[in-house]
Image 1: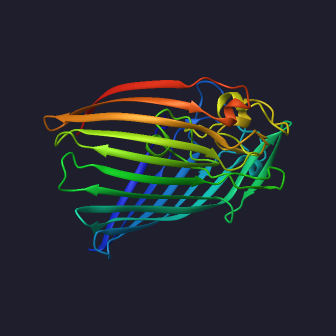
Image 2: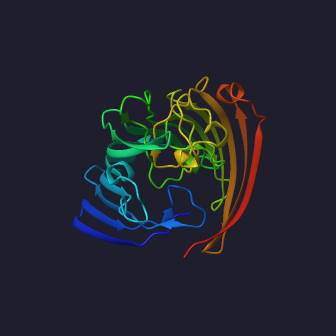
Length: 325
């Protein structure tokens, strides 16, 4: 888990427009994966706006800048500075809201962003700088749902589509795999964290009901695919997924090459359908500040896994208590 030293500043410019600024020094594991050693040579800056000019809708433009490798070239990091550091600029926006329809509401949520900057990879022990192509490095998602208001259990049905770019050609001197920076992918891509927000598209079908005023039962079904077969299958932590990290068409040596901020390499996986995941979760609250939830998940492997060694379906379950402060 990342630790943060952060400064946040909010500004309410007008009743319909406000901004939030953030400056942070995240502490993360070293990119060269040396055990027990953490990095504090990273800085993150962000500016997030909220516009409420349309009734029942919000528009949220944002810009983020992340620098990783501030001490590159120092005595502790005897690498070439340009080949070591990663600089990432993110420009994006989101809009969300509701439209009254019949006896309920249609809820909509859309977001898109592009990235530019530079990163690096390691092949045959040689580090090289790669430019991040803003024309190819992107993410988009869309959610549409319908919730009945005056019906027992307040049912809602929904559909979500997520797409995060991959790198189709690891030998062209540029990099176009989306980097989600500090991600959590539980909700859109499954509680089992088998799919991260890189080189993928995910279809999520959702049904939820409220048996009581304080409880909620949700059922999600995710269909997970890779966009580029020459790129990798990434887990929620942004790392290349375990067993597939070593299946490279071009040599990318050592454990560092599978880290979340490394680029390059060629996976040459067979197929694009990774698998499907079913998630069922029940949550409830008691008193004012306490709650609990339980969940079960089942993953069904498809062609990418079957053609690269195979694996049986797997299951996962959890239970947790929640305290709201």
